[in-house]
Image 1 (tube, helix red, strand yellow):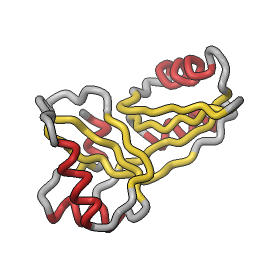
Image 2: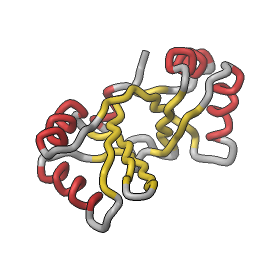
Image 3: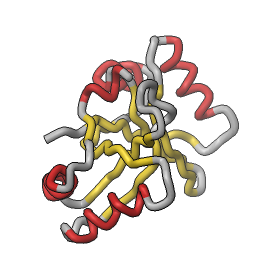
Amino acid sequence: MKTVKEIAVGVENRPGALSELTDLLGANGINILGLTMRAEGAKGFLNFIATDPTKVINILESAGYHPELVDILATEAPHHPGGLSTILKVLKKADVNIDYLYTSIDQHGLGDRTVILIGVDKLQEAHDALEKEWIRTFGEELYNF
């Protein structure tokens, strides 16, 4: 089954907190490929895909953060009206609940395609349903685009 490793980490919800984290990763040669962040009161929650997830975990732990690695799906959606809907209908038919989704930052070589990063309640079922419908999924090769 093809999945990607997402890093989930809490940060303070204050000016500069996200900048400090991304500066730390950039200084260590890490490229963020896709991310989402939300704030709830004094805490912010960052979920992202980056090159070398194991190295990211080590960097963040060394800096006092408490990151987690989570397996999620990375799938290709055509960049046209209804492209995302195709993926969502497949998951609906397979009775898979989507916990969250976000897009990846521009991936070289994909042309008119978009990479959708999806957290689901039933990872294997979601992967199998997408594969059955010939919807392209990515694994570790996503880190090298």
